[in-house]
Amino acid sequence: MNALNQGVTKMNRPLWLLLLLSFLPVTPGAAAALPDFTELVEKNGPAIVNIATMQRVSARSGSRSDEIEELLRRLSPDDSLPPELQDEPSHPRGGVGSGFIISEDGYLITNHHVVTGADQITVTLNDRRVFTAEVVGTDELSDMALLKIDARNLPAVTFGDSEDVKVGEWVLAIGSPFGLEFSAAAGIVSAKGRTVPGNQTSYVSFIQTDVAINQGNSGGPLFNLEGEVIGINSQILSSSGGSNGVSFAIPSNVALNVVEQLRETGSVSRGLLGVMIKDVDYALAEAFSMPRPRGAFVDEVQPGSPAESAGVENNDIILAFNDREIESSSQLPFYVGQVRPGTTAMLSIMRDGSVITLPVTVGSLPGSGVASSDEPQEPPRTNSLGLTVTELSQEAQEVSGVSGVRVEELLDGPAQRAGLQSGDVIVELNRTPVPSLSEFARVADELPDTGFIPIRIVREGRGTTLVLELK
Image (cartoon, rainbow, N blue to C red; front, side, top):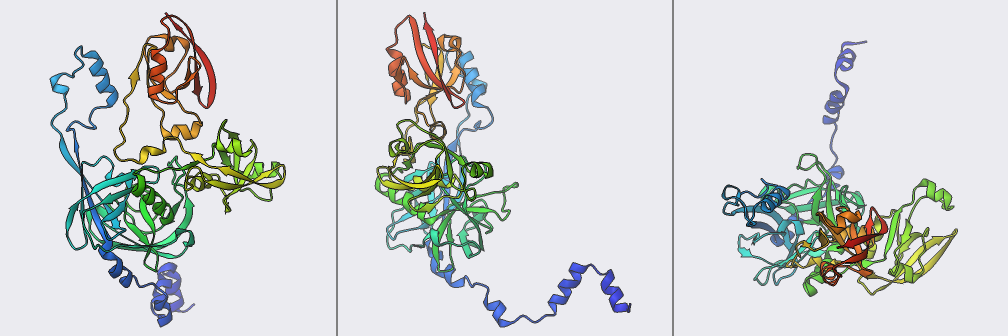
């Protein structure tokens, strides 16, 4: 072995390969294959905005748990905290995000989580003009917010069709990471139809990219090479809080649907089928003679739901909704949620080895009016039954398929003696449905002073009836 070969053998092979490649000529064609984003940035840059929020918070906010504060209040005879534990004067807390102009008359969009709870929203344009923004409406389920500033003749972006996005294509994000205004970052689409781990709602099927998205990028646009917005940057998956090359954008088609409703009504309506579903795994596919696992398996059809009216049955496998094929069960809520309530849609279903088509009139998702930015929240209510109840959250209604009120706290009284537990969902009181706090309060006020009263609850997905003894 000559000296050169010995040297190469001793040399770290990856380093040796890099040194060899550095001497290879780069052909003009290889350089030309890389995208040039300069024109895209110059054209769309004026429509990108920086968003700064301000919220007044208590100086002690976050330093004392709500449970401890409530305990202290109950121990204090006059329902006030001792002077040394009372809240100090509030102080401002700021936040930053991104957004972009969608019309020349001052409408712009960003993420719900960027502006939620803000007392003041300041928008800085690319030309350094500053405006105070008004919230037209927000939608937590899609993480979208529509804002309005008092300005005219503004530059606006052009939207593309997010259905046409392909995995592997180049994309560019522009925003304000860490408050650094007007910063561009490029990457590729790494996946489509993603449900973010830990996110229990399925009303957004995200575009996943490897673009460097960081805090402050939220609400900014994601462009394709044609300079069209095909997504709104919303979330990252990170163990450190910084970019790990896994970011998620709301598809433009979803955003436009939400924005249109927010602009018209200030809230968002979503379709509902009324089925409990799960993925079709290998065992289910074998049991139901399917060539491969796909679709959404119907575990249970909710009574009185649009699905029941349409003829959907337990053990059906939904293969498509309005000709959109369903590979995993998480896609079905997303597709249904994009349809306005009252619309007739078509379901493709496998039943007993055959594929059938059923028309279904889509219902309305309970509580979908939460999109309004100023919707009041009712506080928990107490009553003579010895329990505190709160409104059942929208997510819980979706999962359980029932409407009712949740048991927040139990005191010594009829409810505790009957065996109710914190977290139970009360759906009927004295044989009367109680879908809301106001209905529960009305029925509770009309109960007799003594006697045995039935109360129906749902606990861990199962319904049961208990008996309250009033005395």
